[in-house]
Amino acid sequence: MADLDDLREGANFGLGVASQKQGFHVKGADHLMWGMKDRLSRIFSPKTGRTVMLAFDHGFIMGPTSGVERIDLNILPLVEYADCLMCSRGILQTSIPPTFNKPICLRSDAGTTILTELNDNVLIDIEDAIRMNVSAMALMLSIGDPVNEAKTIANLYKAADLGSKYGIPIMGVTAVGKDMARDARYFGLASRVCAENGANIVKTYYCDGFEKVVAACPVPIVIAGGKKLPELEALELCYNAINDGAAGVDMGRNVFQSESPVAMIQAVHGVVHDGLTPAQGFEMFKDLAK
Ligand code: R5P
Image (cartoon, rainbow, N blue to C red; front, side, top):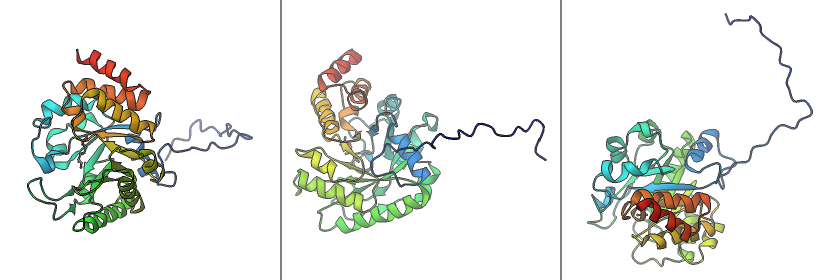
């Protein structure tokens, strides 16, 4: 039987004080369930509403390209500065110690490699994602690709069904085919299609007119970094994206291929979360890189 000794009657009911309403800091997520919100809050800082995701899933289609040859040497020193880690399950299980306890955005589709054209795209079993306690699942969409568009949208749709069943947010990653224009019209369409099919987060590229892409997308957008740029330019890219409404970055090469990746990720963090200008971020980078 429960211990009833000194069971005191409640007396502090705050009568006359309206019950507190709690807003939620992630765009489009107000009506989601608790588990989804908990996971989204691990990715997007409740203080700033933003995130610095570190993407190092490149090897799953490209093999050991520059900067991800050795996850233990190249990536682990960066982990403490990232808000979220984006990688494949193979790298997660073999190379990321669970003791880091960082939220994971799991690359959850698989297809072909850079040696061939994309000709198939499959989704991993959500039970595997649950076992790995991931905070989001990421899938690529080939919007505008006549062969793979339908297949990749169907994957997203299926992932969104499963994600909503188990409380796992889904990130749609807009791949850009060789023939696609990298403009606001294309990225606006691709991002909106992701959200309409159930993505809770969209990853896309920065472009002129990006504020329209963000405005028309009902869920948060994070930008990919793309090819390696000089550090100041990469920080300008982050700054402009945030200024135009991005909720953060999911950056890979511009961090791990930097001459000082540890300095670069901290400078990116300063721009994304602390309102540093690109020039201030670059000063920070230079100081930390010394
Ligand atoms: C995209 O599908 C890849 O998965 C990368 O995660 C993405 O391109 C971000 O990396 P980066 O900043 O190097 O472009």
